[in-house]
Length: 452
Image (tube, rainbow, N blue to C red):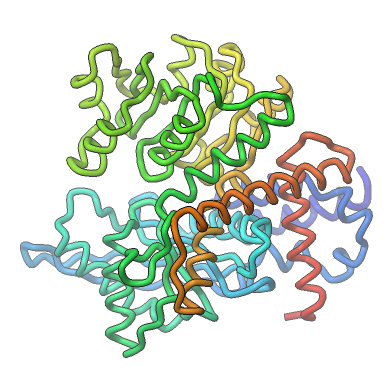
């Protein structure tokens, strides 16, 4: 084992011992560290400045109580989190997730990933993440409003357009952002538009922000496919999930000539050999807030597969592209084998860390193009930063101009990952390319700013 590898293993052992039980956080650190031995060998200043140790420790971790009252007058207590991970490149930037599964380790893994994702955009934003174990499903608008107001009553003191700028994530959409912003404005007596992104278009939001993560994932995949002379035209595609990211990924794939034949939610999956009817899917998920099984009931040739991930559809049809857009560790080694057998050419992560390490290894060993989330799904945070630019200048851009900026950013991310992988002797390895490019940019900034 080289001295660089020994140093990495020593730091990784410290990470595990200092953060016990946080499996997802350990996984995120391991995935980055595996790309770094050659980097440390080439750049001994990173070792001398203890960059590995410093970059794994958040600058600030905030945990707070969130009391709120339901419509029957019952008092509930949830836990709120904000991990301000690294501000070497700019103010902390990252979403808020409201879901029962949210723990400190969840937020730390997401925040750690966000550092490098944000660096890859080329925009001046640091990494952070937050959320709560509150579940908005089944709650009334009034209950969600009261929860969001209680959450912001504590969180506001840690936020600001030059300090920390949250956005949405799972369970936090335009409705929640509106309630959070309203409470921030009420407490601070300031209309500080840039303190939250994902706002409504009429009050400071950016066109394309809603579509950005899904669109960006497809743009990145399009560039990966082009390296092998392929495109989405005529491709059969599987997209996991049926939320915001999945819906807009389906929309852009269809626009580029592909056919999405499968989608899913937490209850199961659908297979539609004629291609997903996006209008019907959006009606069910966004208007009715129903289950995806309803799609198969209303679409003649569609089939519902209860309790199964969308990757099971690969047993029924050839698959060219797979886009995991739901949640972490949703695509495992078994699923990867199904996709490989179905002829998959490219997999790109629309969600955060949705592919297990074993599945990534299987896909790469089979020669499948693999776009990691910190590169492939960076379109959402990139467009959030564009929203911040518009707020800072009191400006508003057209949909076409903003989408063009997004497409340019995703192309630049692809180029940067590909060129970095080539530079470090692993051509075509987008995982290593993304990790190294993001890490070196943040590490150089940390060294320049001293030991802080």
